[in-house]
Image (cartoon, rainbow, N blue to C red; front, side):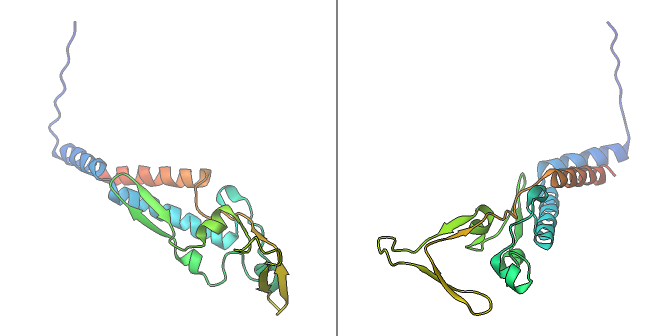
Amino acid sequence: MVTMTLTLDDARLDAALGEAIRAASDMTPLMDRIGNVLEVSVAQRFEHSKGPGGEAWPVSHRARETGGKTLIDSTRLRDSITREAGPRSVEVGTNVPYAATHQFGAFIEPRDKSDAAAKLAFRLPGGQFIMVDQVEIPARPFLGFDAGDEADIAATIEAYFAEAFQ
């Protein structure tokens, strides 16, 4: 049997290993960077009107009529995207009440469906007034991540630990 012992006495190596261990024990700074990557990705989705994976959002009636952009009227939803980083995770999302309707889609119907005359009433851009039985809001996902986000996150993790070893 052959035994080999290697002893390293290098203050720089000790410092780098210590920093790497510290960086791995509380990854809040890394999680914050990952959250930033995802926030930027969501902002680009609003800019390009595309969901994760690049699928174009169905154009909204308002955007079609006014020449605007889908999901960007008041910019409240777009501007509400935030991140919250912790030692082992990051959450990226919004507290806007109607966000889930746009993310997943929905059917909107009158509250009192037992009344056969119950309708939804809308004034369209241009002043036209309409009444309908229901409205379908198609899904326009803006949250989530795709292969491009995964690559950006991997690069962020790599850079983070490379900095820890410097």
